[in-house]
Length: 259
Image (cartoon, rainbow, N blue to C red; front, side, top):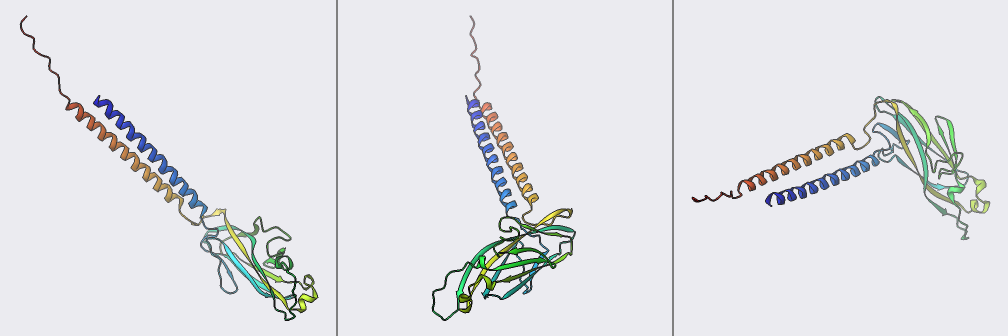
């Protein structure tokens, strides 16, 4: 009876430990998936910097563009330098665009109620890479190519490769009525560019986030600790069972008298 109770208790412990091991593996698998999803879009050392010294954050690859005081017929220029400074690392660079906000500004003094104009539809930008034009259209990324839903390739960058990305933006006067232009119609638009660098087959992959090998080592160490704990518990239960059996009273047959 005591042996049966001990065996049932040991089975209960084994089920508990197995469930704990499975839960631990699932938690760390989820952690590994989240870690891989939060990796940087640009490797450390891939520099993207504008003419004012503002750099692109490598963790999200985002660069904000704000054009203020836009007036019909005016031209605005903006330049980004793309520089791969990663040692022994070759990357394919991609770029997409998305709108943030537009704000019409009516600076006229006529007091007239002027109609609303979508500046993303009215304005136009041209993008060129080292002088070669590759995009012309709205700042929201919809134009000669669609950069709003998919990334546009900017070429392959070997170590120390440098290219200049130039933007020319304008609010064409022919898209604004003469009455609005004479009234001092202007505005501002804000949009962002998202850059992503993909390691090619050549070169050494850079560290672009949480080291997945470290996560794997942690999972293996935890599994080893769980297995060791299971072993110790089983050995403890066996020892307790052996002691319980040893403590059982031994029945001694009664001596028979002379018949």
